[in-house]
Image (cartoon, rainbow, N blue to C red; front, side, top):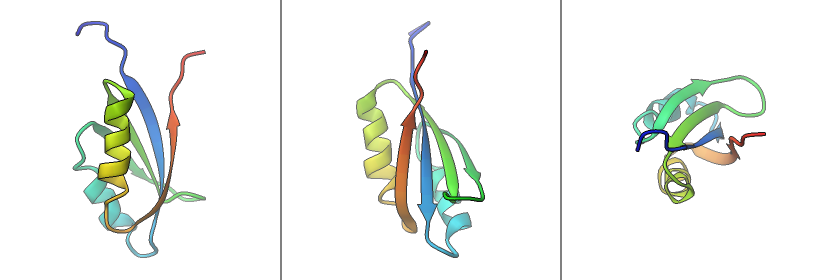
Length: 82
């Protein structure tokens, strides 16, 4: 729909040591994932996703990201308007 607000979220991913590149490539294949960036710091990868509703976001995180081999942990930050 034109003008429909999409749910946007950053998913902060911790990957297993030595698996960061492999995990990042797999995460890029998940539908509705708009970008994947390998970063330094507390997390290994930051994923940006844009979906039509929270149910789809839940599916991406639980069925997609969590089931990716080499993913150790995630923290999801949903974008809000203030």
